Image 1 (cartoon, rainbow, N blue to C red):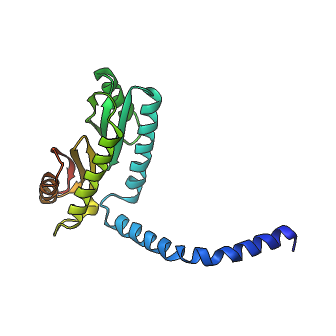
Image 2 (tube, rainbow, N blue to C red):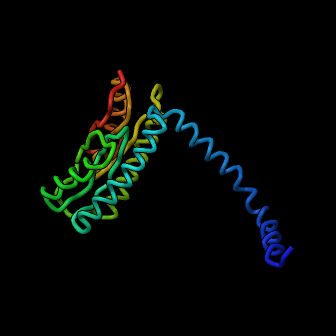
Image 3 (cartoon, helix red, strand yellow):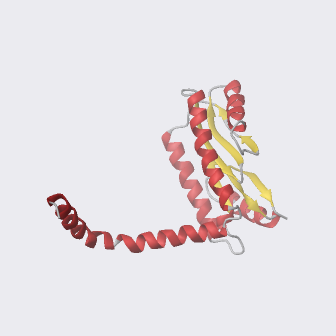
Amino acid sequence: MTNVQRWFLVGSIAVLPALSGCIPVLIAGGATAGYMFAEDRRTSGVYVEDQGIEFKAGSRIKERHPDQVHVNTTSFNRVVLVTGEVSSEEVKASVTEVVKSIENVRSVQNETVVAGASAMSARANDSYTTSKVKSRLIGTKDLSATHIKVVTENNVVYLMGLVTHREADMASEVARQTSGVLKVVKVFEYID
């Protein structure tokens, strides 16, 4: 055994006690992700496509309009919601075309507004509102929060997912009754 191999072995053994606490966390995290994936009404292929669509859309929009937009793209079942701020109506139209050109995108709902980029404090407030809505959805009887994706932009809550009409109405009501929410926009696809 070489000196490098000995040091690697000694270092690996020395780190094991520190890593042992991570193993339960990794197992629990994997179990939670597995449960959420099993509950998702999208196929695994569509789930992966949605992740790719979000990445490509964000990259291509920033590439085309580096200083003219602050946008967020959310894909659910290959339906893309675009929120945020753009510098003009022309840029807004261009953003829609950029996203539509991405492979596997079925439709685009462009909810951007012509305005300057939102402040970090507004974005933090939107994140807080999203977490409040999600928490309330989790606590709602007869509603699986894993079927609903929540996006907040400028205190407007967008709800996406594959849901029944009853689930959509319940989720919308929960969001409407959450403090700080100005408006709720349904971007649902109905399964009934």
